Image (cartoon, rainbow, N blue to C red; front, top):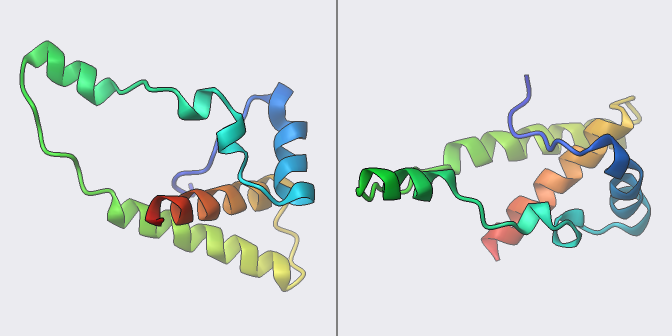
Length: 101
């Protein structure tokens, strides 16, 4: 299984696909749920009255970026990667690039 693929509600899929493939924009800023402040880790720490170090997500992010770039390269070579995989790959790539800014 490819790590970090984005899961979208079926009812939102058409809009997400249009924003990514036709408009060329990262749809996360247009989704309330994507920007929600819901942090289970912080809630868990509050419950335990303990603060823990933030985990290093760089290896997972690198793996996600690599998988996304592989899918985009395959699409550019004319391989049938599927619309969903292409949309998810672009979202992952753009979102990780946004984090670097």
